[in-house]
Image 1 (spheres, rainbow, N blue to C red):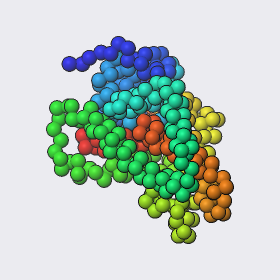
Image 2: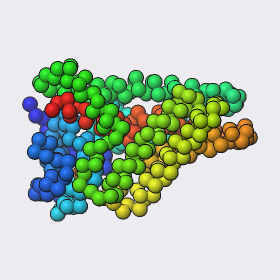
Image 3: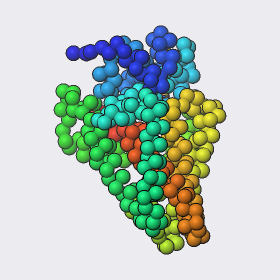
Image 4: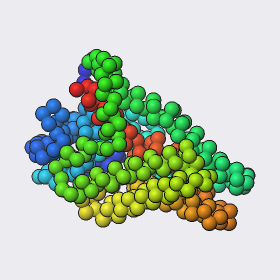
Length: 349
Ligand code: SF4
Ligand code: SF4
């Protein structure tokens, strides 16, 4: 039986939704959305579900993930009800619902909590450094931390959350899907994860294609830098090809994220007009990670890191805040959930 959460619309405002109460249900937004179709019609029905408090329907829906936030619907809404921003807020809300710890939702609703967690991570690292300042130990420990953090975050947070997502959108419903279907559709998971090709279906101009290209390069640079530093131990390597590759990947990351930060700041396109703090944390920390990793490797190559070891600690703090806060609970998870949403969507269809 459908239940109504009368406080849902109010709750969603804490996730960044604005002005959606102005909607008078004309349907313009759905008509102009290139990704909406007869079978998956949105964003109007998502606004209706929000206004009428159908939170369970939203929790079991993949539609918020089918939107790529091109902003066309917002541009064409006669009531300025910002349907594109509502879809973005629903993705934040869903991220909070999938997370079994409840931390993701808490952080989305509370900027102070974000700051406290960031500060706690920084103080823990600086405090531990006061106890043991052996530089070699810190260099080896930093590498070990990366491996342990990735394994722990994936196994303890992301994997259970993906299972919860599956349960909300498929498991809790009556339709039975044969296991074979999950296997035969698996390819689509990786295609969407690495290419985000559906965003190219958005009816947009060259700016959208450039956005897609930037994100494609960013995803590959990020994953390759992760592989280079975590599995090939970039900071300790003397292999010239590996060193050059690490430089290239970190350079690409901080150049592209610098561009994304400037665009978000300038607010020239609809998708950059409204930024939640979590959007800022994502691009700024990714920039800082790429930049600080690049500089640390330069300091190693010029053999001066030992004289400015504080910079390595700064890099480690940024890395730990990224790995322990933004990856498991922040906007990074959208990358994962959207890919699985596409996969589950194809499995269901
Ligand atoms: S959000 Fe705007 S365009 Fe969409 S149905 Fe409501 S009033 Fe119409
Ligand atoms: S932001 Fe773009 S993709 Fe998302 S609902 Fe609006 S028109 Fe569709």
